[in-house]
Length: 123
Image (cartoon, rainbow, N blue to C red; front, side, top):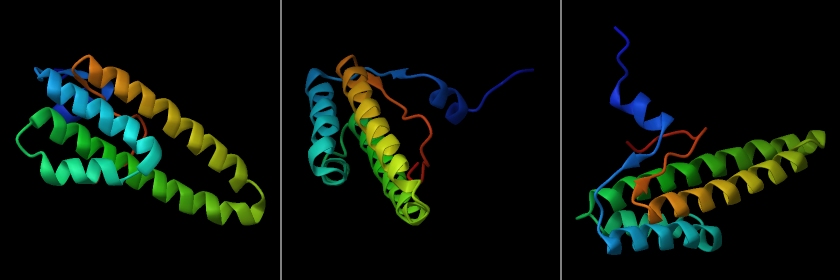
């Protein structure tokens, strides 16, 4: 018997969700806004837009990404003393840019994007 729990299967691939065009657009805007205002946009959406499951799940995922990026930034700051943290900052920045764009594309297609390699504190 090879069963997986819902959390395991949802982290392996994007989930298709029946979302309205307005919800898809809001999720895309939230993802793109994260590039400029970081954690503020998903936090505001998470606190205000509670009627859409699609938006709530993506806002939670975005907040978890931001928390992970903050923790990675702290680790890179400490590693800067050893002169390898600067490379870490560059890698984290490129990762953040790429996965945010991938999330925006997935959300525009009505899929909830699961960021790879993040700490999921909000469930």
